[in-house]
Image 1: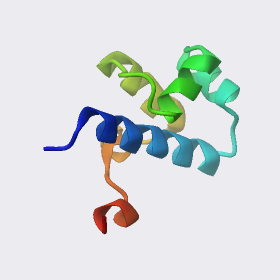
Image 2: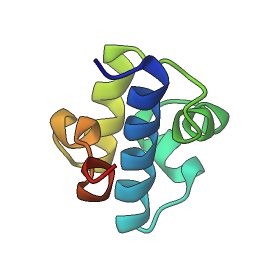
Image 3: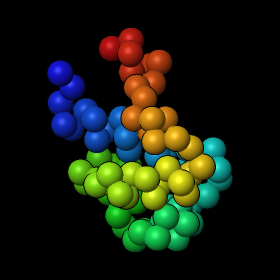
Length: 79
């Protein structure tokens, strides 16, 4: 079973990856998702256990499917 911290890390890394692919700041993502900028930072640093409602808001703002935010990267699979 994957630990809670590991899941939060995976999610946070994926949010950061897709945000950077869109070339937007944490503040821009927060505005698009109707969330606070510091909350986005905490998610990317795996400091927040996010709700399903906010996962959907972020996925919509990043224009990705929720499942993409939960996928383990290929590099992570090699560990």
